[in-house]
Length: 479
Image (tube, rainbow, N blue to C red; front, side):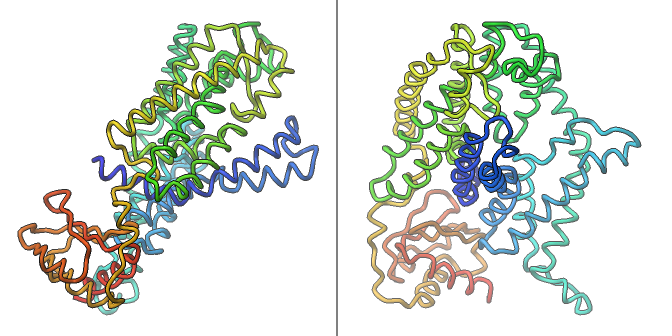
C-alpha cells in the first residue's frame, strides 16, 4: 500500500511543479486589486487569469499526470486516457446532466464534482486501462481499434461504470460532511480546531469544500467570511473570523517551516533539485496562501507527515480561536490577505499572528525534521537511490546489449510483470523470483542488484538508466 502511495506521489510531482508560479501570479494580481479581482485593473486581471489557468484546473492536471505516472511505460496514450476518464465522469455527474436524470434540481454535491479526488481517480482509471489493454488483440476487421487505440474506448466504458456508484455515493458523502460541519458549530474553539483538522485532511480528495461551505459561507448561517468583511450582517466582535484566523500561522509560517525541514533532510546531491520545488512552493504558500503545491509534494510520498500537518492546523485554529486575535481572507490565508485584514471591520490584534506564526514555523520544522529522519520518509530529495549511483559510468553505450543480458538474468520476458525506472535504477516486478540470476544481471555491467521485496528487482545502472529501460521495454514487447 505504501509503495503504491509513493508511486502516486511521484506521479503528481510533474503537475505539482507547475502550480507554485501560478499561485504567485494570482497573489500578485489580487494584491494589485484586492476588491475587484481584476475588475479595476487590467494588469491584475491578466495576472489572476494567467495563474488561474492552472490553479482552477488542478484536478485535470492530476488526471493526466497520474495516468502517465502510473502507467507501465509513461506513454502519452495513458495521459489521454486519464483526460478521457475525467471528461466522462465530470460530464455524466455534472449538475446539468444529473438534473435531467432526476427530473429536477440536482443535489448541490454535483456542483463540486470537479475536484482533486475525481482527478486522481480518473488518472488511476486511465492508467489501469492502458496497462491492461494497450496490447489488446482484436479481429482483423476491427484492427484499427486494436492495441493502444483500444485504450480510449475501454477507458470510456470503465469511467461510465464508475460514474454509476458515484451517482449514489457522492451526494451521501458530501451531505454527511455538511451535516458534520453543522454539528461542530456549537463547540466554540474546540469546534474551530476540529474544523481546521478535517479541512486539511480532506484536501487530497477535494471534499474540504463541503466543510468550507458551512463555516465560511451561508449554508448554515455562519457566513464567517462575509460577516468578517462587513458584506453580510450579524458579525460579532471577537467571534467572527474564528474559522479563518488559524490558517494564517500554518500557511504563512508552518508550511514554509516544513519545506525547510524537507530541504535540510534531502540528500546532498539532490538538494538543488528539492530546493527548486520546495522554495517556490513555500513562497507561494506564504505570499498567497495557495498550499496545494507544497502539500501535494509530500501527502502521498509521506502520508504520516500529512496527518501531522492536519493535526497542527487543528491546533493552530484552536489556539487562535481562544486568543483575542481575528483575521480573515477573501482569497486565502497568505501575506496578502493578512495585510488587508488590518482594515476589516471585525479584525482584532492581527499583528499577533506574526509571533504565533513563528512558533508554528519552529514546530513544523522540528516535528517534520524529526519524523522524516526517524522513519526515513521519502520526501522530495530522499528517494531510495544511493547518492553514489549518480556517478556510475557504464563501460560502453551498448544499451541494447545490456538490456538483453538483464532480461535473460530476470528469467526472460515471460517472467517480467512490470517495468519502471527512477533516476538511477531499473525497477522490475517478476512473476517467479527463483528465476532471477543476479550474477547474470551483473555481467551486463550493472553496478548492483537489489531485492527489496519477494517479487521486486532493482538493477542499479546509473544516470543513463533511461536508455537501458527503453531498450528493455522494447525487448519485452517484441517477445
